[in-house]
Length: 242
Image (cartoon, rainbow, N blue to C red):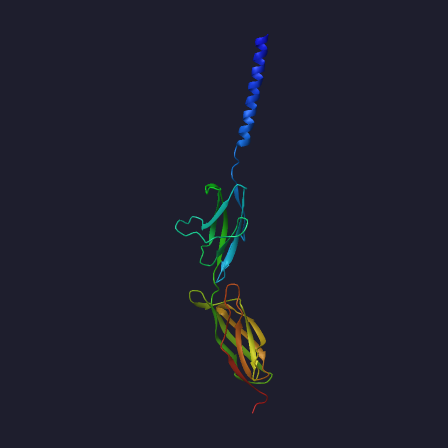
């Protein structure tokens, strides 16, 4: 009986030691470092012309991480140098983009380092860059105001063509052209008529003659087209025929 009791006690003690040892090993296990690119703003990054757009990257990291780096490159790029990245506060980064950057899908990669400078984690995220093309040049040609000598109250007719440079000058259809008038002795221009361009960029408009002065046609431009204006046309207005 004594031998059996001793055996039972030994078994219980051994079991307790095994349980205690497992708990210590679990407590001593080191948690894996974590890093995550949490936000990219704006997305897509839209740039155009001479403007520059700054994108902001927010990275989250576990407390053991002592340093975070960020790199951004176009997806699939092999030789293009990574963009310059500026670190702000709390693992927040800024990256400037301009019209010289490739449009399309980009990849951002964040790397985490411990106190010894060893990389312990990384994370990647994707975003888009959209590059707006510059506006196409336009011009107004063959602008005329007829007749060039007219009695007061009679009609003055305007005509001309709006053209766009799209690998060569061609008519711009469906665009609004305004006619402005500057009376003799005046320094300002006054709107008098408007017209929509037709096939070949042609436009026509008219107004009443009240006082001698000069006229011009003006296109204000659009999202795709630059503005332009015509040469001036002078009209002499008479009160009576002599």
